[in-house]
Amino acid sequence: MSFISKGLKLSETNDTLKFIFLGCSFLFLGSLIASESFFVPHELSIACLVGLFLYQRFFLGRDERCLTPFSRAWLLVLLVFFILNILPSMIHAVMDMAYGDRLKQHVENLLHLAFFAIWFVLAFKLNVSAIQLWKFLILSVVWVFWVLFYETYNLNGFVNLSFFIVHHRYGDIGSSYVIDFGIYSNTLFLILLGGLFWLKKLGWFWGGALLVALGTALIGAILSQSRTAWIGWPEAFIAWTVFYSYYLWKSQKKILLLGGGVIVVTFVALLVQSSLFGLVEKRTLKAMDDVEAYMAGDPLTSLGQRFVMYEAGWDSFKKHPFIGVGPDEFPNELKKQTESIFSEQFGIQNTYLSFGQIHNQFLMSAMDGGIFGVFSLILLFLYLFVIFIKQAKSLNYYSKSSGVVGLVFVIASFLSFMPEVPLYQREQFLFFFFMTSLLLVMVEAPILDDRK
Image 1 (cartoon, rainbow, N blue to C red):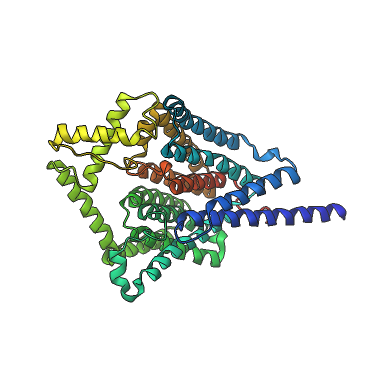
Image 2 (image 1 turned 45 degrees about the vertical axis):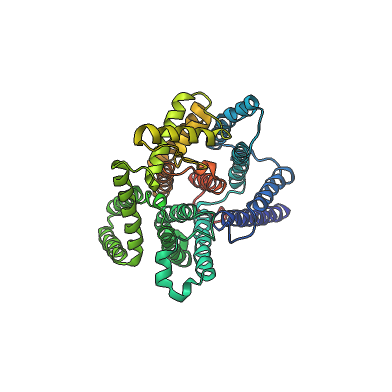
């Protein structure tokens, strides 16, 4: 009897710790998505989660079961990624005898990798299930809704809502930036498309919440008017269409396949006719105009300046291939390279660009950290692609869906690294590694709670 009582007590303790873990993670994600309107710093959530890890480790005993070969491999990837990025930065700090603000920010971002290692291990220790993670993701869209409401309310957008949503880019005052908010919303939308496969296990309540969350996340992505977020749509549409069509065909659910196809086509047709599609069309046409202007010899448009910075980043990497120029020297290097390009290629004198980044993570890493920075990104994405492709080949469709979710996320992230530098901006850095850690946990997590 005492053995049974002890087992029940341990189960209740684990449930309590799991609730705290997911609750702190929820607040952490909110501090990123709604960083300018939800005034709980992410450092507080990190401190709580680290404290939970220490309590689990020292008061409940060490549990080596969570350190599987899969877990060890990801922790090793995080360690190597950290070393490859921190090494050139430290070399520059020693060589230049300086530790400027840009270098300090870069190092602080990298130190957060220790937190994600702790979060990853803790999720395994608490035996968080896949269905609990799906519910967590559904609930996380609350933060997207909060930003939409917060900005509409504070800017008096409800007075003329149809006009406001067309002319205001959401994420401007409620989130860290409009592009960030677009990426957050779109990432949740693309991932939650995979949740449709879990409708039966989620139940009616959470299934309905999933549909609401999908609509909210999509609206958030569109209203951000962020082209960076939208570049993840085509491959996600292809991936999920292939997955669901294959599953329904193999399961002899051809009527459901036909019905689903009709619903999707109808939804897309209605979306195209709505004012929301006009926002997408407007931003797309603006990009095309910028490209045409650049080809005609005008490099001072939004995209034109990005093209100049891409060339500047590549030229800088060729001159400093080993350890790059370092974060603190980046502004001077960008000024020098862009001034040369404007003068030699466009005949524009005494003009240069002065930005905090060059809108391409790969070139930015090459420019700042040389071959070390480039290899760290190759290692990171190669590992993630291999893991999720392997999972997508699973014979179990629930496991297969987790692999497809991971692939959609990794491809969308890879593409967003082309026009942005997520790893040099704190909120995006934290969001990327948090979602990566969560999806990797989902790969190995039990489908249902261990009590069921």
